[in-house]
Image (cartoon, rainbow, N blue to C red; front, side, top):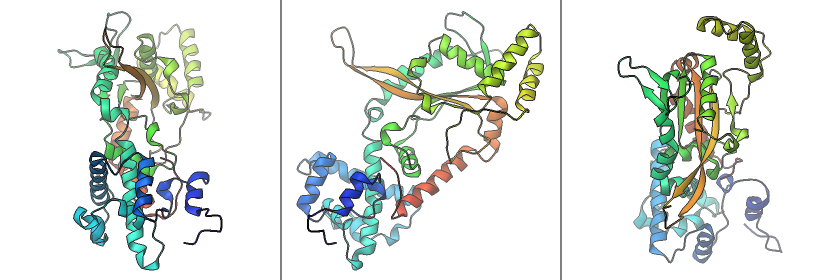
Amino acid sequence: MHLNPWGLDPTTLSALLSGQSVIDMPRLAVRSLDQASEFLLSYGYNTQEPSHVERLWYFHRRALVYLEEVLELDLSKLPEVLKDRKALNDLRRILIFASATDEGDVELQRWSCRILRVMHVFVHAESDLFSSFSEDIQKQILSSFQASVFTDGASAKTFLKAKDDSGESIRLEGFEIKPFKTSTSTVTKLLAKPDAYAMNVLDRMGVRFITNSILDAFRVLQFLIQQNLISYPHIMPDQSVNTIYPVSLFLEVLEDLKQSQFSMSELEIENLFESKLARGDQQFLRKENSFSGEDYRFIKLISRRMVRIGSNEKNPGFSFFFPFEIQILDAKSYQKIQEGPSRHQAYKQRQREAARTRVLSEKGASRI
């Protein structure tokens, strides 16, 4: 590649001003080992520090495993020099290979880019607060939810109940702590979604409430606020989803129930909800997710909680807000997602296919 008379590099300018992620660029612009060292120093790793170099080799191994086991790429086609640490010897060489422009280096250049794309996302996925303080974060966020969910030993029924026994308990069909999102799962999400940022992965952990009815879904929401299990000033409004029942129609039903002096049975109340919904003027709160099925109906909130690390009487430690997800589904909706096209494995497969396409592509648009 020949630069123009002013030395302006098209690759670098594209990375800075086109809105295109480095992941989606067709090549880098690193021409020498010295340039590679300076590039990596700016990126966050000093090649003169053995621990930094080992960390980069770790991400190289993670990338190769991910390409083969998750994206199911045939690594027999991978140039040998990129597979083996002894053959490559110096990890900086991948940056130079990824910048090659000679026709004879096409496969070497493309595979180098594929490895670096995955390495880059792993770096971000495993260099955040959760990676360093996952135990403290989980304990401080999840303990209050767990303390409010009770299972009756005799009936094996589950209830959401205030710790001081104040107020009315809410019968639950189920309560789940969502499996913690692993770094591999996070990498797939970041590669698959064109608008995803590593720092904005907000669902690494969360809880799910499964209720008997639409009414109870909203009662759970109210309970979480009243019992201060979530603080509504910390809700991230642009992340909220409600596809269970439109709030405006829900308030209409409450007015109808009020006029009937709340004398209806649970079945009659549920039928009233369904009849209102059948009018066809639903105003759901949706957030676009191309990987979720249309039958995935739920309430989702992303809240944040202050997490304190190492604080005691003598040491204030430090603190930060950490996001977590709350999902609320009625039993009917939960059953549908267990059986229908929104089931978790199908959802994950759609993500993997999108991630694979992006890693293999020479073009794209996303940000990390």
